[in-house]
Length: 485
Figure (cartoon, rainbow, N blue to C red):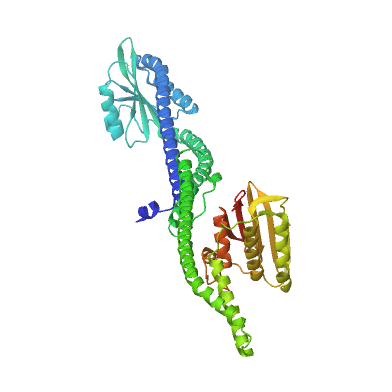
């Protein structure tokens, strides 16, 4: 369960932790190998030192044993034991045995009395005695007995192929304690330095690699629910598999957004086209009886014998029919009507027309007209577009609010921007803004923006709506130059 929990951790923790564990294990393994290698070197060094000591003693001991001078042999090994201990070889005991494996002399006579049989002294000496019997010639040997606290160096006492006995040099393993402790301290110091460098680097690099993966996973989970943000290119700047994966994600997100925008545009275009056909069909059906009724009203008005009440009623009916006619005319907008080219005065005329309505709400109207001379666009339609947008902006603006209009030429297009500080529209409202008889219109039939959309589309342009800092609504029209009926 613990391992499953660990494996389910986020990569932002798992990569640094795995890396840290591997660094710790590697450092421990290297340090252990270093100490074991150092221990083996110490053992080899001890064997060499023992062999040197044995070779320096065996000639003198051979002469003493040959003369059966036990005291001289005792002096030789005592002096060697003291010298060896001062050289940090730590000689604990030196024993001389004859060929019958009896003790001739020793530096520790209480532990190894003279004339004692070697195998009767202790189990360790019994094992040493067996090893001596297996030795051949003048070859020296160092014995490392398992679970023993001593090392035994065996040096035959020979001269001219004559063997008088064996020199046994006993070393205590305590000789390794200070040397091994020093080596362990060095290994520990080096290991800690390695960890101090590698662990922070591993933690930084692990999180540096994991963070892009974490963000990528979080954004992939959002797909289908909401549009996540693009991955910051500076998050991972390298061009390896990770970098290519992040580029592929950003490109996928861009393609999906484009596809959704295209689908929304197609759906909106199909909806508007269907509504336009419906509205046009209704308008044509209304026009025929409407013309007849207006003709009948004109005929009645020429009669002088009508009562005042009848005249008042006819006038009321005529105004209602004229309103219906205006509405029908809006539904049947056509861009094929003849119109002169647009000039700068046409734009300024629009300001004159809408200023009285702006004054009623004490609005500040910002006006920026950059046109100079004649522009190859139908003046009637451009004026109608601007009037519809400005009336809509004035209606939406708050009391003593602001309405800004900017008209200019840029990159072969006429740009019209109308901004107001009125009520902010939601994305859902914006998506249905250019539909006829929209529920968004208050106190009107909602045809102004739909007519504007139709004119802009027929002129080959586009119209967009966006919120700016949740303070202003911006309507922008972009129409290519040279479009003329």
